[in-house]
Length: 193
Image (cartoon, rainbow, N blue to C red):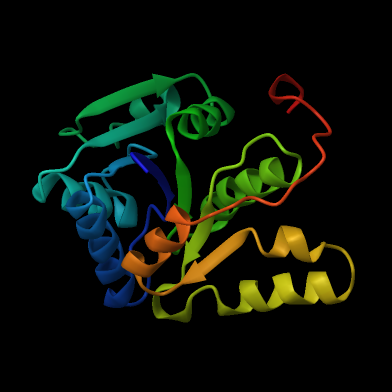
């Protein structure tokens, strides 16, 4: 595991626990010499995890669309900043760069990024580990909903088992290290997404 993409909020959230979770993940990544790949912003949990990895001597690659760069919200001190043309290009580039994916707490953008990675795994477009860092029980209801989807037969158990969930960054990354993706039928290729 050389690079992890982290999806997270451009806000800090209602509790300091979310910021603490971003800091803990950033420290764990730097300790393991794992490069952070993220959305390139200087604000919210995005800025916090980037700052932490950099302060701990780690490497950070930001990927930001030109429209957000024009608003001057990109982080000024990254190891590398890649500017792309659209939000879709941002996700595709982050996917190409990363060996795995973690979602910290965030809003609709974080969910959209996470669910696209989840969907691509179901379609066989990648076999990389992904999961939720469940800081302050933020994702409890989503995890429960995944179980409900499975019970109601809208998601196979093999797809449900793809999603790692943990409140501890060290444990979550360890789970990634032993990931063996289930066999899935590839329905489309990347150009068709």
